[in-house]
Length: 501
Image (cartoon, rainbow, N blue to C red; front, side, top):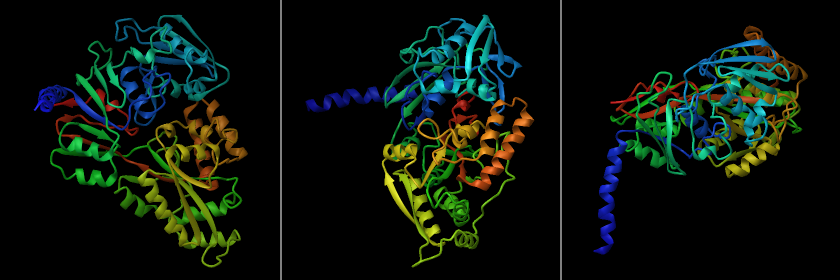
């Protein structure tokens, strides 16, 4: 009997906790943020939760144009001098006024190594920052760098108070619409409304981000009502099942996450563009979108998403044409011998959707005489091989990184090879390098667009990647939440306007 006492005492406590959570929106996330200091955390959970705690100088709209935020306006005095005029009257959560000194400190702490972070590389072309008065910040660049504005926007960098050091993650103070309340690793992060927010005040009084790593458990938490919402964290077949539940609502919107298939261009077979094009013609994306993703994806033809101002859809497309694939492989000198032209090896992680996709690709490529061998590894091992260039084929996704056209430099410039950057297939084209460099220097929007249009056409011809599909953003939520407007990025900005009823 004595063994039952702790349980009997605990049950009322759990009931009280559940009732108190009814006053909060409970959102399921898959893993804890690594570090909510906006200068350090680079994982999705850190960036998305952090954007609710910290304001940035500028903010992105749904077409990835940049709009005022902490900076009411900005002037580009010349290609190397950016002047930001700060909004007056903004205060941090502890009541301190936010001034140019705080902005300067935020970026200087990265540039001078006060805080060691992978994010520092994004500001390597910043020579110095001045704060001539409380409301003015001046960035001096080493050379023209058009992506600077993107790199001071939400999701890229939030502003922290002057003096914030290495241990800032233990006492987070921002100026955003929500205040940090507390966090427990692998359990939860709790935010509360900033009643003194300078902008439109959020309707939600409290948000609890509940960490639930297991997919089935996430679905059960939503089904029984102990969680309110999950975004992009349930497999497509589970979403289809949950859409039939009366108490749950499934909303989807075209997203920007790109699934792609990458080639190692140092490989003697794959360096031939005819082979890469043949593989593209041999792949039928329609059944994979229909059956693996239950229609929650759209065919992709660029690394940039269609919502982007620099996107160009008028490029070479590779529809499913196995006869054309066979002809190209014949022309490249790879004839069929005993039913096989050659073998390729595709490395994958243990993630289910990727393994299923590889199995479909194996079948489709076999139809044109290519034997695809699949090697599956735990993610850390798989990703290490990818970063080292130790692969023939692999598939991954760009989540957020493809929303800035500077991704062309990161992924396709000939100097961006591993381990520092992401040209993992060792692609090289002098014209692409020249266009990438020009796009980074050009400030005129229409001229930049023309540069990126030409880039996309060349990449579609050279085919260092096969762009597979853009995944939809899918929110599964309870009916007690209203004003859910998930943006193309699939981040948590909608929580600024969501309400409970």
